[in-house]
Each structure stands twice: as C-alpha cells, then as structure tokens.
Amino acid sequence: MTTASLRQTRARRIAALPAILLAAAATPAVAQSDKPKQVESVGTGDAYISVVEVAKGLDTPWGMTFLPDGRMLVTELPGELVIVSADGSISAPLAGAPKVDTKGQGGLMDVALHPQFASNRMVYLTFAEPGPDGTAGTALGRGRLTSDRLEGFEVIWRQEPKIDGPNHFGNRIAFGPDGKLFLALGERFQFGPAQDLSNTLGVTVRLSDDGSIPEDNPFVGRADADDAIWSYGHRNIEAAVIHPDTGALWVAEMGPLGGDELNEIDPGANYGWPVVSSGINYDGVRIPDPSEYPEYAAAAHVWSPVRSPSGIIVYTGDMFPEWQGNIFFGSLSAGGVEHVELEGGKVAGTQFIPLNTRIREVEQGPDGAIYLLTNAKGESQGAVWRFEAMELRDPSADDGRSGPGAQ
Image (cartoon, rainbow, N blue to C red; front, side):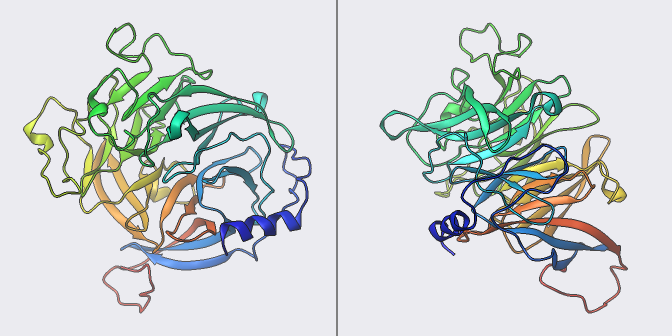
C-alpha cells in the first residue's frame, strides 16, 4: 500500500478523532490489526524469544513512548503523531504537530514525555525544521496533550546552523534524573563541524525542560563554544538513554563503513569524529584509528560490520529478569536488535538478535515487555512488535527450530 492510499484509508474510516482521555479507556481508532499474532520465535543462542505483532499499518514510524495508561504515542516520519492502543488500533493523526522537512532522512522523529507528564501533559518532539533556501535543521519543541491535539506547540531549541542536505539529523531525547533534557544530534553529514564548538552539529546538548541552558553545562561562558553542548565529536546519533543506576547518558552512534560506537558520555568530552574512527570513509580513504589519538574519549564498544543503531533502552523489567541492567538497541542495516551485556558499567558481551527487518526504535513497556518499531526499507506500513516470552533451551541440542531468526 502506498503512503497516499494508506492516508486515504485512514480518512475514509474516520472523519475526526474522538476526545482522547488520558485514562485507561479504549480509544476509537481508524485502523485495527487482527488479534496479536506471533511473528516468529527467535533463537538467541540460549533461548527462544516470542516476537508478537501488536499493530501494523504505520507509515515509517520513527519514535515511540508510553502514556500512563499503557497506550503508545508514535511518530511517523512524514509528519504525523498517532496513538497506538494495546489492541493494535491506530488513532487518526493528532492535530498541532509541527510542519516538517521530509527530504531524505528528515521528518517527524523522536517523542518523549515530560517527567511530570501526569500533571502537566507536556509532550516533546524532535523534527527536521525547514529553513530558508531549502535548508533544514533538527529542532526540539513541546506542546500539551489535551484531547485530540497538541495545544500550544512551540519550538524551544534549534540546532545551528541550518544547512542544505538530507542526511544525519540524528536524534533522540532523554530526560536525566534531575529533570534536565539531553538531545543527541547528527553532524548533518558535514564531518568537520563536529570538532567546532561554535555550532551544534555532531554533539549532545543538555537543556532545561523549557529549552534554556543550565548554568553547569561544561562550556558555559566560553566565547568559542555554544553553551548548550554537553559532548562533541559525534557522527550521527539516533540512540540515547539515561542509565537508571548511574544517571549517565549513553549513546549508540553510526559510524561510516564500520565503526559503530557505544559511548558512555562524559560532560565536555570529545569523541573524535571525523579525526578518528574505527571505520573507513565511503570512498575507501582510511581514517586514523582512535588508539592513535588517545586525547579523544574512547568508545565503550565498537561494531564492524555496522549495526546502524536506532533506539535504545537499559532494561529494568521483570518479564526478562536475566536481562536486567542490559542494553538493547535497534539495528537498521543488520535488521534486528543488539543485546549488550553490562557488568560493573563495562561491556561484558554482545549478542545480535536477527529479525530480518529494520528496527527503528526500542522501548520498554509498562508490562516489562520490549517493544520495537519496524522500519523495513521500501515499506510504507511499519509495525509495532513485542518481545513477550522467553523459553530457555540447550544450545547444544538440535531441536529442529531453525526459523528465520534462529542461530
């Protein structure tokens, strides 16, 4: 189904979204999937994971977060914000979302709730904001979720400068334990500016919840630096999370040909791009290895071939107690989920969970399950999947279960 026909189907099924109450009542919907069905049983070496389809029919979904009642706010890259219910129904687009630039990798991207959402109903969105003469840049805004819309949406921070080009908008939003907001960004495929503190290309920034600059940011007061910057020397970050035990910001960022990185971010640190990388440039030109320049912050782990990380969690639920404290992030290019075991704050091992489709976002649900947004290349109908059960097995035994995800 094409993007246009998908939208026409939604329009025919409902003319206007009924009032959305932020309570546990079911939401009337424009589309509803069949009863949740198992996609496959994925072998991970020591277990099988049941992968269930929760909803389908989303148009290039990008970001996801859970409302207090268990429903999901989901962004669609072409510019729409929808609500997905547990039964798979998808609401009509909410009014009040910003106008977005949809060239290349741009569009409506991440979504997050204010830590005090239950009382203030503030929703934060990132998007590619159109600029003059065909330029664009990542922007952060917020509005209040009322009934069928975001009321009073306003941009509270903009990446500068806006430039021409369709690539590397980043990004992800993460709220720290002190209520400050981290925004991880791409360098807009511009390379050198990631080493220039006077702009916000290829950086992470730290903001107050209204977009103002905290006085204890590492570069506040420096004439040659943007006060919002928390770290720099990044390539393209679409995965950011706050570790629940330490409060530290962790990001997974995309390398060039090889060299995807997992980084625990230190304030003020320079992570080296484009001076160093464990990958090589697309034209085959070698980039110095990080070991040759120890002044740059070292990655916690590096992947080659790449995973193309997008969406990340530190798992804290009870559904999979064996995974508590571990990192999971989506893989676009490899098509699955990367499982990173942490011990004492260090990477103790990694395991790839193949799903044979591009995974754009990973979230932990209030039920302790792991939820995924699929974003298969060339498809207009993305889906919500869920890891919801795990069966331990003897990895030395041949039980004949060698489906598309088994190893």
